Amino acid sequence: MKQDMIVILDLGSTKNTVLARNIRDLGVYSEIHPHDITAEELKRLENVKGIILNGGENRIVDGNAIDVLPEIYDCGCPVIAIDHPTAKCDTCLSALPVESALKEFLFTQCQAQPNWNMKNFIADQVELIRQQVGGRKVLLALSGGVDSSVVAALLIKAIGRQLVCVHVNHGLMRKNESESVIEVFKNQLHANLIYVDAVDRFLDKLANVSDPEEKRKIIGGEFIRVFEEEARKLDGIDFLGQGTIYPDIIESGTKTAKMVKSHHNVGGLPKDLQFELVEPLKQLFKDEVRACGIELGLPESMVYRQPFPGPGLGVRCLGAITRERLEAVRESDAILREEFEKAGLDKKVWQYFTVVPDFKSVGMKNHARCFEYLVIIRAINTVDAMTATVEKIDWDILEKITNRILEEVKHVNRVCYDMSPKPPATIEFE
Ligand code: XMP
Image 1 (cartoon, rainbow, N blue to C red):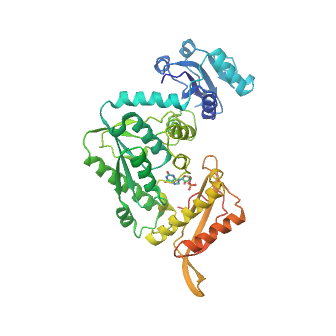
Image 2 (cartoon, rainbow, N blue to C red):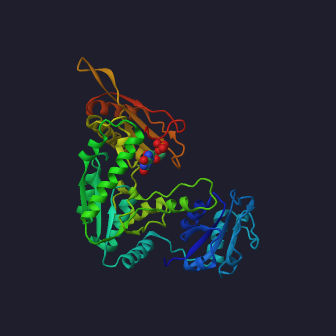
Image 3 (tube, protein in one colour):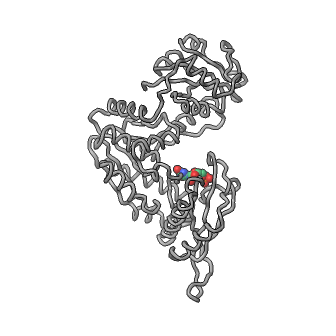
């Protein structure tokens, strides 16, 4: 990393990431580190122009207020504290409005250059990836999700066909999703892409399995087996590319936060696949990952796609999955997405999808009784997916979507709109 850096030392604040984001928005790269970082470790970070001691509500650990090591003050760059002065630092950033105080600290006291932008990030990473990988090969599980797509595009820019992408179609993808992965990566970016059609294999394993947790386990476990089989067919792979992003690292690394989420690595690959990791996005927040994807030329539809659960449509085809109902979920979801896009709701609503339960209801079609499935529409807004509110959709739009689903989706005679916030409901049904 050649760019200037401001280091935030976590003294128990819950707003470390907000501060890091504010600094990056001002064009200066910023990282969060634990309060007990040593001067030696700090030196290894390179280009550190200033340090912010970020105190907060979790400062008391086991009855004592935590502090930084005294040697930190002698590291040769300005040190400033936020909120709880520390033993040696009584300068307080919050004396001024945050933005002007930050600007004064970054650009006057630290003399930091505002050179954090995606062009520079990509140029740096391309160089670092080439140094790390040399002439060897990298394997990547390319799901088509935002993170794996952006990693793939960045690795292709850096090492071209030394990257081997494996796209597993588990049959639970949305309409045209695998096709779009192939179109973008194989046809446009000329990626070395292995497409694995594992649809029958997954659906056979899932047949008659109705317990949601069991379904998730089968999907996750089977994914690893398919990926492992493909990896073993390949020769000379030394590296595994991963879409790890900055929140994954800080959420698993904090020493003061009360809620610690474990760092999930993509696909949960088996330990006996001995690879070195390549994680070029591990410094980026989600919106920076998207900006990076756009800069690399990925289509907006891929980069701005809404969150999609790993088990895919499998958790939206409720109960034991059947091909008939899975198709109804896929087709109704495609209609919903198309109409949301037309109405501009795709940019406004955080997550929206359809669900098909495993029961039928009575209806009338062509003057005759029918007994068919129902489609539930769900559209929610949230900041962090921990709580969610329901989007108040215009009645005319809902009516249009309903009519299209009833006309175009086979085996469906009823459409409902889910009005439940989270809590008590979760966003997904399973
Ligand atoms: P819930 O249903 O727990 O969902 O309110 C919160 C958010 O997480 C997504 N989700 C998942 N994402 N693997 C994922 O990668 C999963 O197994 C999974 N389950 C739920 C869900 O879509 C929502 O955005």
